[in-house]
Length: 117
Image (cartoon, rainbow, N blue to C red; front, top):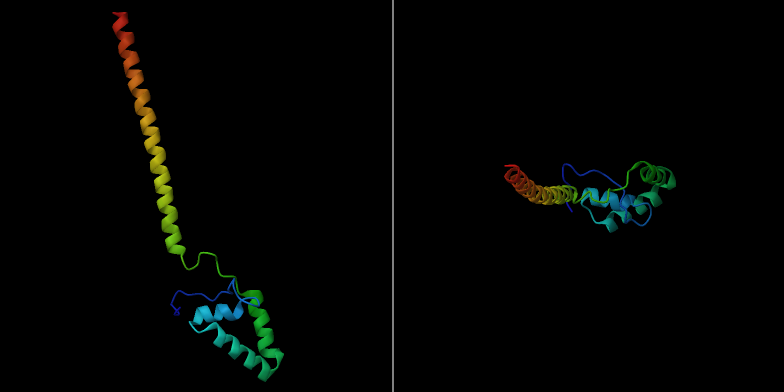
């Protein structure tokens, strides 16, 4: 996946430990294995303090990736199509029932007027 302008940094839901490295890999378009190797090398060479603490802070403050982040627009369109289909189906059902009721009432009124004369 390549980095796009509207792409936000999230923690991945499918990561190994808190999903920070997988989230960075998804955001940057890099391989997750490469991001993990770089992160481990940086932690090993500088000690736990800068990169270990940074990792824990990112795990705490970065939000998890929403379930439908990738398909958000498609999901909205699918939902809108479902809603419009449901509304249309209900309208057609109501229209048919109303027409049937209207026919009955018109016949009933015709019968009443014809008997009253």
